[in-house]
Amino acid sequence: MEKKRKAVFLDRDGTLIEEVDFLSTVEETRLFPFTAEALDILRSEGFDFVVVTNQSGVARGLFDGQAVNAIHAKIQSELKKHGLAITSFHFCPHMPDAGCECRKPGIGMIRQAMEINDYDLENSWVIGDKQLDVNLGHNAGARSVLVRTGYGASHESLLVKGADIVAENLLDAAKKIVGIES
Image (tube, rainbow, N blue to C red; front, side, top):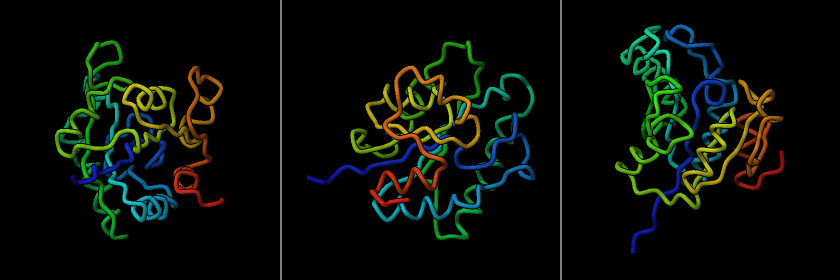
């Protein structure tokens, strides 16, 4: 029997890239300086990378799905320079009160990713900078990491159900996941 793949489900803004309120342009898209190193560590342990991001700016009319996809293409291009790649990108374009299944902490985007690869959720992780990312991990049956970048430092005190790991940033999270002392 083939072993299931494991994944790291990554929040985008404030986790994988620098936080820009309602990021809408490729020009404003910047990987954190430690992003490639963090993903390289996780890749060495056999993780796939899946981006799951709420993008209510689409529903608000601030930007469209093409802008979101262009930003994702830029992220993929930057990571490719380091020999890395995101397996799939998923975004929720709805308002927070829309009641959709895809908006985090709902598991719709993880279900979409599971249609591409049947991931072993028990051995997968959700990494993000908000309570809803931690809740997504709980709801999906994966483990969770709250990073203190982006909104993470201010959300840490709001955690109702704790994260498995609280980390300074994505690199610290990667090291803790694979057991490297940081």
